[in-house]
Length: 209
Image (tube, rainbow, N blue to C red):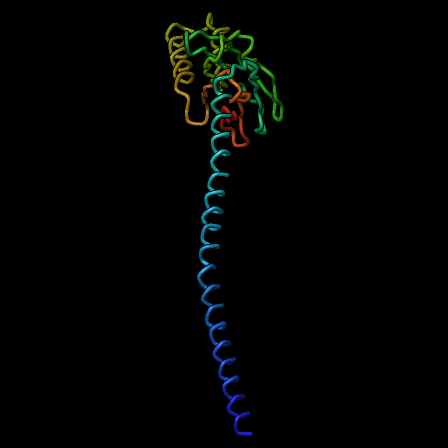
């Protein structure tokens, strides 16, 4: 019985020692492999996300550059009155390269009405050209016409005074009564809208990419 007990004890000790070795090796191997596997994955994910963002920005920039250099003369010039009273507006379109007036008109527009006045393609631009579009409220023109028709009935002094007053009113446009904008005949620009707002102020409105 004593021998059997010693043998059993030695066998038990041997098994315990073997189990201890196996237990020590497994955690060591698992711990060493984990960071080597995860770290490259994080780096790859970050670099992939950065690479995906770059082409989108480049494509958008290339599209704007292309549109800016692509000729497109089809740009309408409209006149709209959003105020609650009729307004008289002078609209002028000037080719900036030559300072030539391509179009000029004075229109009285009722409240809530929009008119198509001009299209830049009528100026036959060569490639991409710049045109300045100006609008101005000119209700003082009525007094100019009246002064001309009654010129014979006025004295020389009165006529001079009337003409001086008319000139001063026309040339010194207060803020909100005159506005200008430059439109280029390319695909980046949209139509130009000379607009009298609800508050009576005039503004040239347009869109650009």
